[in-house]
Image (tube, rainbow, N blue to C red; front, side, top):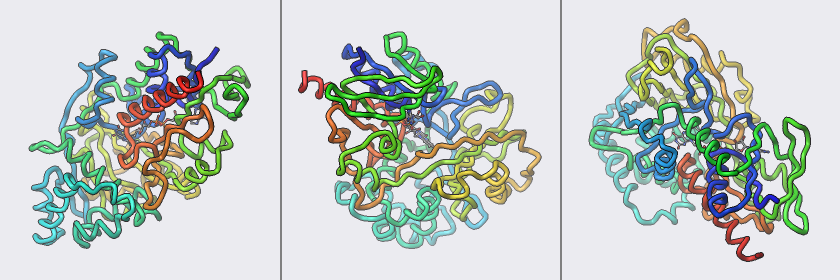
Length: 439
Ligand SMILES: Cc1cc2nc3c(=O)[nH]c(=O)nc-3n(C[C@H](O)[C@H](O)[C@H](O)COP(=O)(O)OP(=O)(O)OC[C@H]3O[C@@H](n4cnc5c(N)ncnc54)[C@H](O)[C@@H]3O)c2cc1C
């Protein structure tokens, strides 16, 4: 007999299964993809596992660090400087520390000082909850100053959230600033990277769970969830064809739109899900024959084509010898699935960023590109809109025994592996409370 079906073997799903198994529950995890890890899965480049999307670990990512420790991988966690920069009007400026903001020539000395003080205030301001109701387009210019907001923040918000950029809740932006602030030491960002990738962490976690008795069904999609007098009927489609699982509890560790496509939700929860739009991601991972720049992360404030958020040179965080001497560069484009970019060809994705790459390195030429790996995920970023339902979004769906743990549930924090692991555990505890209630 199955106690709980967990949908999705991303980090939230694995975290939920872990907690339930520790409580002695029998758990089946159903994952549509061929591998575990979800957005943090691994692909292979030159035989080495690497994330399909840029990933690093912040020092304050407690859940991720604890899991790495528990799985005996602590000697593979490395802390490295990830130099950052801002590209503005065709020039690149180092942007690692508050001092770099004070040196940022495109803004006047007064504007820089004001933006610096305002950033410091965001790290400590006590009124975070009020900020759920205030859009960045109002609160941002008020604090940072219109010019600093337009130069530094607005382009990034537009690249990430497209038409929703003006309506993003200030609480989300403040949480991002705090996340960055927490990792910033006197010498600049100190970021963690797990040698072998976070995908390898997910794989090691799944192997541990399997040896503890959790059943993992990969390449198996949940098609439909139906309520029964005893709980839930879960129809799945896997390598051996259609199958039906039954369990008193289901924890859906998938986005709202996916949950809505497989279950009929009660109107309040369904309406909340409808009010959380998602941005998809299309990311080109370039293998280059030589280094592009000395920066790990370059935010490009000059508008790039196709919604590209910036240029992330992974091999300025992690040495190139891991990847046979290749330089790895991510070009991430956030888009709506209706947008033509969603199905753009690899060349188009790269073309949109070539001028910025040439600004970064005047000698850059196309023949440096040895290979391009394009990955897509439809539900990569929920949009934390002001007035939306994300603040306090419940794990309980309103249907007995159906729990939901998605990227939208960690608001005001931005998504993250550590948050997903913690959220999965929270959902498992909610499930345990349900077991305790119904006996
Ligand atoms: C570009 C980018 C950069 C990021 N950078 C970082 C970073 O630097 N550091 C960090 O900590 N985090 C980062 N993240 C965030 C991090 O990857 C996610 O927050 C985390 O992996 C989410 O885990 P999850 O389990 O909640 O969701 P997901 O990873 O989305 O997992 C959901 C799972 O459900 C499966 N699924 C969907 N539908 C079905 C179905 N019908 N049946 C069965 N299975 C289904 C999916 O295949 C997937 O495996 C980044 C994300 C992106 C997109």
